[in-house]
Image (cartoon, rainbow, N blue to C red):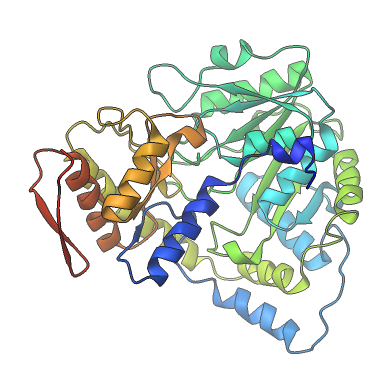
Length: 405
C-alpha cells in the first residue's frame, strides 16, 4: 500500500494514544489513574445542552454558512468586546470544528511551502505537525535554564527572511505558564514591525489563577486596519468543558477570513449546527460555571503542587493557568517516553511525555480530575521512583511489591 510522503512523516498524537491505552486498561478492570487528561471534568453548561437539544427536537439539522451561523458570529463578537476590549465585524470571524481546525485552516491559508513558523517551547504537541502538513518548517524556540517563557532575544535570534508566523499559547499547554505582559507587548510590536503573523492560541485565556490576568494583545497593537496580521484563536472546549462539541473560532483580517472560508468550504463545509447553537448557549448564558470550574482547578493545582513538592528530585514550576503542570523528572530518568511507559506499566498512571512538547525529561501532569486522583496518582509515581518510599503499595485490590530499585 502506498502512503504519501507527507502523511508518513506526520507523528501520531501522543495524547490520543495514551487515552486509548488508558481506556483499554480500564476495560480490563485495571485501576488506572489518568493524569494526562486534556479536558475538564465539569459538565457542559445547561444552556448549551438546552440550545442543542431544542434544535435536535425539530429534526432540522442542515448545512449552515461555512463561517458559522449568524447567532454564533454575534456571540463571538460580543465575547471579543467583553474579554478583549476589541470590536470586530462579522467578516473578521470564522467558526470551525474546534480550535484545532481553526489553526489548521489558518495555516493552510497563510503558509507557503518552506515558510517558517516559530513555535515557543514548551508547545502543544500538534503545532509542529500541523505546520509540516502545509509544507511549512517549524522552528522551535527553547528557553534556557529550564524556564517556560522565552525572551524576545530567544525569539528574534531564529527569525529570518522565511519567517511567516509566530504561534503563542498563553496560558500555556503543557506548562501552565502565563506569559508576561511585557513579552506579549514586545511580540505584538515586533511582529507588526516585521510584517509577521502573530497567532495567539487563547483557548485557556480565562483559566488563570491567583488573580492574574491575561493581557489582550490588541491593547499593544498600533495597526487596527484590515492589514493587521494579529490573529486570535479561541473556542468553547476548555472554558466551558465542551471538548466534544468541537467549536472554535478565528479572529483575523477580512482577506484571511475570506480565504479561510474558501478552504473550510472545500473540506468540512461547515461546523455541525447543534454544536454551534450549543456554543451560543454557553457564551450567552450565565458564566458562573466558568468561575466555579476555575476555582476548582486552582484548588486542584495547589494540591498537585503540595504533593509534588514533597517528592525529592522533582523540580516544579507553579502553573498560573490551564490545568497542567510540567515537572522535571530528569533526576530519575532522562527519556520521558520511557518514563511515561514505565509509570503506566508499573503503577497504572497515565502521564504525557514532555519530549512531545519540546521538554525532554519532563512529564505533563493534569490536575483537572478529582483530588483523590491527584493525590493517589502522585503517590503511585513517588512509590515507583523514590527509593525512600515503602516497598509495598496497594493499587486497587492488589498489593504490589517494588523490585526494581
